[in-house]
Amino acid sequence: MKPSILVARAVFPEVLDKLAQHFQVTSNQNDELWMPAQLIEKMQGMQGAFTTGSERISAELLAACPDLKICANMAVGFNNFDLDAMSAAGVLGTNSPDVLTDTTADFGFALLLATARRLSESEHFLRAGHWSRWRYDMFAGAEVHGSTLGILGMGRIGQGIAKRGAHGFGMNVIYHNRSHLDAATEAACRARWVSKSELLASSDHLVLVLPYSAQAHHTIGVAELAQMKCTATLVNIARGGIVDDAALAAALRQGVIAAAGLDVFEGEPAVHPDLLTVSNVVLTPHIASATQSTRRAMAQLAADNLIAYLVHGKALTPLNCKLPATTASIK
Ligand code: 8YV
Image (cartoon, rainbow, N blue to C red; front, side, top):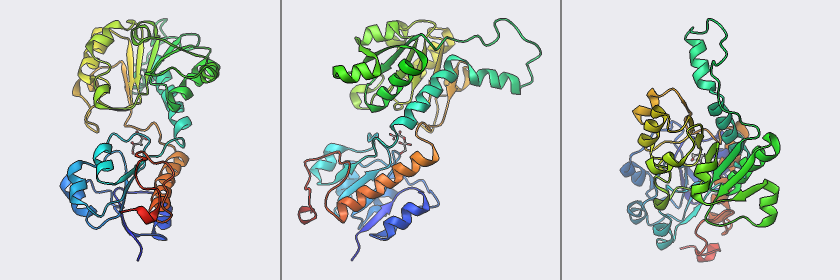
């Protein structure tokens, strides 16, 4: 008998078709949003789940779903997984790295440019019919080429942004990360490791690309914003919660920094009301990986992980590697 899987959110039809060749699939093509208790109910009897960053895989869910063997996330981030609880329960987690790296780095750069050059603000001005004449200082923003690009979190996406900045825009690239990159990678990115305080103080444009964890909560708050240049822009394409959004809105209003570009928010899809009323912020609804081909590749990789693990015994991009590697030893 084919294993049963739940596809928790709407997904490309061809991905469902592929999954149906191997599994009894319960899908959610109406894209209903389930409360945690409903998700637990839907997961009953499932050996696998296709999840996105919105489905929380908690210890409570794991205890209530003893048949579960794998959750395959259509996302590179996996802060929706309680990975320790999953390992303890013998449930594998997988993510979708690499396939979104360049697309997400492109978007990080797009948001940086839009923020520094005041794209949203000036478009709203034009649409509102306020453009009556040219003025010497109208929407004069911050220079991007030749400026200092700071990157906090120098994984694959951070490196992609560094390369775009260094090679495309002649930027001086500095980064902060727990570990230093090896010399060859630093040279390819033309990036230099600095302390967090130097990063905050020296960046003209600071891009956040670090993964979310409890320790990363409010990595950027009142104290950090105060260390930045008053002309600086801040871009968050990492995760909501890394920035204290209330503190950021106040800093933007008070001119502590010049502008911000945000693709992720604390408690999204809710957005802090103060951010909606400041003009010097570009806001996008978590779309950094959203191109047709990249979203397809992410979904395919999540599906391939389910097939690779439940059918062939070895996942492609496992997150908790201490679990059994063969079907024979899958619980
Ligand atoms: C996803 C993301 O779109 O991959 C990630 O970690 O943040 C985005 O690319 C989102 O998490 C939906 O799963």
